[in-house]
Length: 188
Image 1 (cartoon, rainbow, N blue to C red):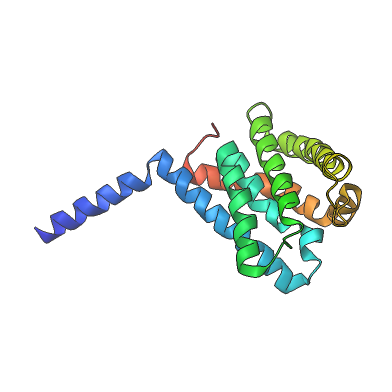
Image 2: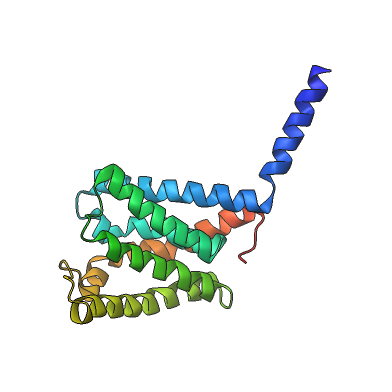
């Protein structure tokens, strides 16, 4: 009798975990956690400039956008940045709102482009348009609102972030495809 109850509980757990909404929630939470851990790993292995060079905070947001869509990628962007700041002090408080806006832009754009194009075209389009929109945000913050840019420059960040952009182009679509196949999901 105990075996039957154990099997029923296991089947119920399997049923719950195979639910689409549960996959989205668990996947979003895991990617948020990785969004905090991956930058720490890069900083430990490659030093203080690893974030600007390899763009590790972008990785989980982009994967989330390809797999789960707009809402998930926005949650991953926000939670990764805020909790990373609270746990590690990075990014700095001055840069936090700018990074939050930047990553949210990338997540939203990639989610939208991915509905119309393949992941590579979507990712390249997101990288280009996202940086243009982000430059507009910086311009508005500095010239219209009178805020400090805290030394943030889109052109400098692109130059410094070329290794990260290359890593994203090589690995993000592949990882998203593998994870998506394993979860048996389709981006909504």
